[in-house]
Length: 177
Image (tube, rainbow, N blue to C red; front, top):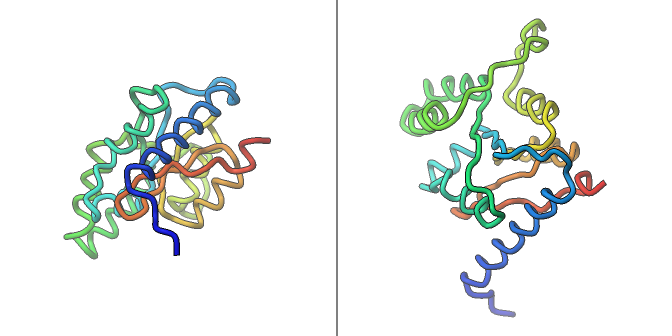
């Protein structure tokens, strides 16, 4: 069996891939908004907080490798509502998660067309509505269903956490079309 490469080589390869990813976006997406918008899903924040990952610092480290010095952090109202509901059931886990979402992120209110419907909107639907209404955005999530839906639209890049490492996922084929 082959030995795994040392952590410094793996880190170098991730930074190099992130730089290429961001360079591709800047060259091929017209009107790429700067500073970029990062929309957080509750699953990502929960994973980061429970694993003691410095969420903002890790994402900014990836952005800085591509020459981006600041970002806009957002979370949807539906995500906040879901975190409040979960906090009432497991306060020890979800109190710091909710605090992060409220203190560090701008809250995006539901659009007027989604508030007129009678059925409640889930956080996944609200994130998809936000992503579909933008030129391009970044989404930080651990939800595999949301990952698949966003990759199929090609309108967002994905941040994921693998153990304690923040990863900028590879571009989907939809972005390259």
